Image 1 (cartoon, rainbow, N blue to C red):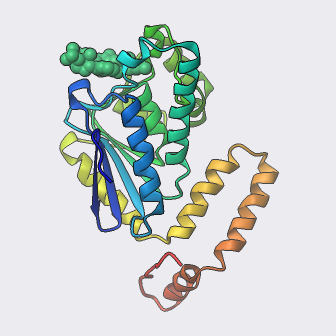
Image 2 (cartoon, helix red, strand yellow; image 1 turned 180 degrees about the vertical axis):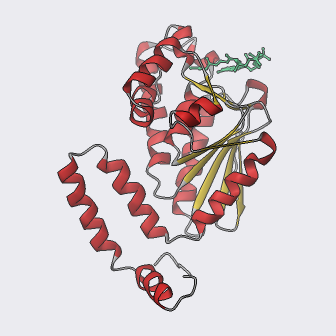
Image 3 (cartoon, rainbow, N blue to C red; image 1 turned 120 degrees about the vertical axis):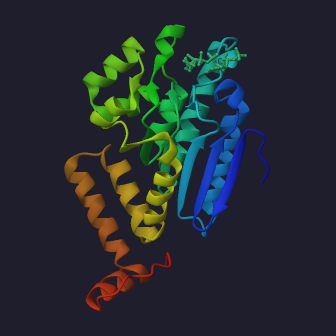
Length: 260
Ligand code: COA
């Protein structure tokens, strides 16, 4: 599938999506959001792909938010549809059932921070800046930032970041749990690829169930979530990979998982 605003590369079991509008710091316009939606659906259906990396083109910005040219002329009904569309695309990323690693190579602001939060794991360059600056535009986050940020870093910190709009450093993001790892910019893609390769050797169905159990479980009561976990724990016992993983351990060798 061809894209104008994204680059999509496949390297074995790992696919890399690069948001490619460097002249506007990779801001997300309607076309980019739609291409991202199509790319995610394509990679979700591709059995050969086990892990996805999302990054931004250039060395300055991951994604500097929604495209402010489009926001400036948005109508109330159009704004609602825009928000729902962005939320839908990011839901697809969060729930695609394959780990998605955000390689945050610079500004992750507004929709960029929301995109990073929809990813499963986040690796940031130490030069990255993360924030929800919408308040400075007289608006609020619209791609579920008001919901994912408190779930990741707690209500108090989310209130502060969204109400002040002030971006934070990568080190501060690491300290509060907004990113998983921080590395020098030159090492960012190597670190993201190393993590992706490690995940790509895991049992795909088990990873799908882990992502599902955590994403769905945090929205349920503890007791219901434990029931749900037990059901997935039972289901995963039906897989070839469960038999291979346990057998390989007992035979003192490395398991080879097939995704069956
Ligand atoms: N939408 C549309 N265009 C954007 C953009 C966005 N979210 N973010 C940056 N750009 C454009 C700028 O307008 C500029 O275009 P120009 O060269 O035609 O003037 C270009 O990208 C480079 O940005 P610039 O502001 O000159 O770079 P900078 O290094 O001085 O500042 C930022 C970088 C990220 C601090 C600044 O661009 C910024 O604050 N962007 C908006 C962030 C934001 O509010 N995002 C949330 C949107 S909901």
